[in-house]
Image (cartoon, rainbow, N blue to C red; front, side):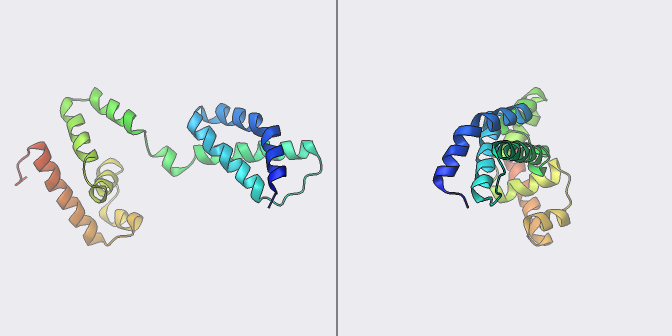
Length: 160
């Protein structure tokens, strides 16, 4: 583990390089800041002994690029969209679709999760049970209850 003086020196020397690399790969200020913190945390925790400044700079570049690539290929990043984007896309659809999306988003988290995984991601109840660490019958119950809540919110027939 590196001391505070070493860490401050490295931040002063490589902060611009790390941020520029992140922006090139990620094109997002917030993701850049996340990766920046990750890279310097790895540096603080690393026990690598650098031969010279060039070796150290090469290490920062490699770690930054790898962290950016890891973020870009992460499951979460590839299977989600920002809420604002989802609402905008829904608004572009027929009005009743955006109404449904707003109703789904207003569900309590335990219902929202199963509805999203089932209807938007296409997972079966068994797969959802594994993902959430719940019993399959619990997932079926949550789906049934969420459908009932959505029917009430959307004014549908409760006997459908």
